[in-house]
Length: 519
Image (cartoon, rainbow, N blue to C red; front, side, top):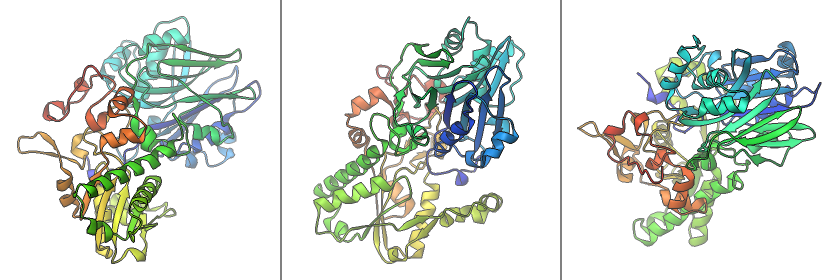
């Protein structure tokens, strides 16, 4: 049975990808490792590198540790003979279990009848059994339970006279999210995105090198400040003759994960503009909704006047929390309200995890060890602003701890709507039973908790989530425009395709509706 008290409150994306190709006798491994280190917000539980020296044997090296721990120095490259002109890196965040075996990390190697590759994957496939059954006839024994390995074997075993044909045949009926970065035995670097474009992937060229990465921050790390998106259904192939980009599948319903812009991607990355500006816009919209609730009498003006500080849960909520504060201060300049760095993240106790896993008391206290609380919060009323709190388990411990040390009143505000559905496309939300905003009724049906119910559950003075229309507005869109261009399935069941066959809880979920026009 899953212990949800140790699952993180935050949603996490599956993985980060990086890769590069250079000319003869140019080692790119160190460059790709540096790119990978800029993507550790995407995956910290496993890291790996596949390297192909031109005309020589490919090597794969991976461990179930944080990427910067695996590749802690250039000695790792030299000691394991990981020098080469082509390399791809994979950073993994697993969606189940505490730790995964080394073989569950990427990249995955597959070879069949002269076609060989190593593949790194960001996303998740929903119809795995069907594709696993295809591989049985080839007598392939998988080394892991990863969907990434299945994709690798599908590609090498599919018919085709070249890599584009094999990829098109392998993925033509695969449902799910897959951004892939691949190095081949015949000295090619390849990158592609699924036809819905769920997960990001960018590429660039500079001084004879080709680079691919999940985000532009990985390119910034190596001083490359120009890039292009790989579009949905596109395949990039780079080799000694140059770079070619073509369609391997027709584009389907545009379904870029909305939380890539609002949470997952690094705030310095670019995707339809600077990601960090989206985070600030969330705070502005949350502030606008707070002002409207005051004007409508849903919040007593005297309560607002009694709040001392806006406090952000560090670190990703900081831009939005400060924008929320500024919006209120500009509207109500007479308020005593101030922005306070009231929670400071603990950054140095790297050894604590082993002890916490083995001790129920320490597991419960884990959140209290994550933050130092400013003494100036004692006896004060605060807005506690977080970006998301999917499960509300650790968030509730934080709230209880703040009250226990003497914070007078807590008004919770969230920079995103309530999560009410699991994600099947590469995020660590596997079931509605994990979600803090969902409960089961007496008939076993899932129901969404009201804000008032969640307020009572957390024992706080008030609570409000950003509306989904406010989220759309933060991206400069209407709600309909956002649903047509983005995946918002975790919020409103607006998925890239009909997810009902892959959602075992759907019959118990009356609030989840499927719109065949938009999905």
